[in-house]
Image (cartoon, rainbow, N blue to C red; front, top):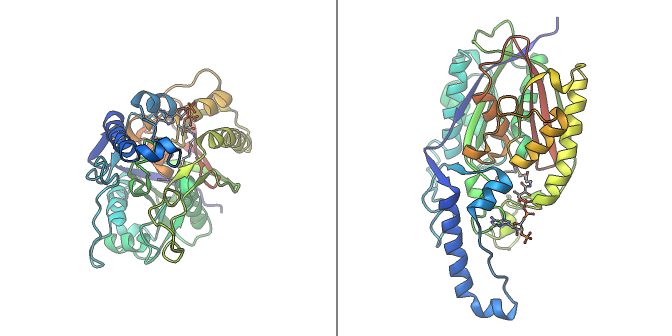
Length: 374
Ligand code: CO8
C-alpha cells in the first residue's frame, strides 16, 4: 500500500533583535560618507569608486522589505565594523546554528504532537552551515535525544523545499518514519553591509517542519503531500565564494566576492519565468488550475518577483490571503521564506483545499510541493 506522507507541524523562531530600513541606511550612509572622505583623492583621480548612498524608500519600493531580524545586532551598525559580533564558542558548547535550529525544531514538534522518541531522522537544510562537520543535524539530534540519523544539506534558496522533498522520499522508501527538517538561516554573517545593492536584502530566522505518515499523525492541521518537483540550472548570478579553500587561496578572506553578491536584475528576469513554468507544470500534473489553489506560499526574496509570478499564475486577484507576503517583517531569509509564510498562514485552510509551497533562487534552484489539507 502506498504510504500517504503528511506535513503535521511547523515551527518558526525569530531573533529578538530587528533592524529597520532607516537604521540600516543611516549606518550605511555614515560608512559611505566616511569612506568617501578618506579616499577623496583616489576617488577624484578615478582609482577608487565613490560609495553611493542608500535610501530606505528605495529599499521598500524595490524589495518590499521594511525590517529584518538579526541573531546579533551588535556590530552591524558600527561603521568601523559592519558585521555582527558573534564570538566563537568552545567546542563543548552548543553551536550558534544548532541553538537557533533547536528553537524552531521544538515548536514544530509541539505543533505535530511529537516527542524525540517519535522521530527517527533529522535534516538540517539551509544556505550555509557554520562548519563542515560534525553535522549540525547530528548536534541537534543529540540535544533532542533523537535516535536514528541526521545530516546537513545546502541548496541556498531552495534548501528548505529540497530538504522536505528528501524527508518525503525517506518516508515513502521506509528509511524513516518521522522526519524533522530544520532551516536555521543565519544569513547576517554573510551579508556585505558595506554594499549598497545588497546590504538590505537578508534577515536571520529558523523554521522547521515535521513529516510523517497519515496513520501516525495526530496534530490538528495536517497536509497530504501530493507530489514534489525540483529543477536546477547552473548560474553565477547569485554567488558566494567563501569556502574551505579560502584558507589556501592566499586572497583576502574578507573580500566582497567571499560574501553574498548577485546580479539582481538578471536574477529577476531569469528566475521569474522559470518559476512560473515550474509551478504551472507541477499543478497540471494533478489536473489542477491556478483557481483550484487556495493558497500560495512562495519564496520571499522580493515583492516584485512575487507580484509578477502571482499575476501570471492567478491574474489580478492576488491578495495577502491567497499569496501571503512576509518580506516586510522578515526580509529575504534564504530558504526559510516560504516556510515562514506557511507557518503564519495555514490554520484557516479547510479540509480538501490545495496549496502550493515553492522556493526559487540561487543555483538556480526551484523546489515545490503540492499539498492538500486533510
Ligand atoms: N538605495 C538607493 N538606490 C539603490 C540602492 C539602494 N540601496 N540599490 C540600488 N540602487 C539604485 C541602483 O544603483 C540603480 O540606479 P541607476 O538606475 O541610476 O543605475 C537603481 O537603484 C535601480 O537598481 P536596480 O536595477 O539594481 O534595482 P532593482 O529594482 O532591480 O532592485 C533588487 C534591486 C531588489 C536586488 C532586485 O533586482 C531583486 O530583488 N532581484 C532579485 C533578487 C533575488 O531574488 N535574489 C535572490 C537572492 S538569493 C537567495 O534568496 C538566497 C541566497 C543564499 C542566502 C544568502 C544569505 C546572505
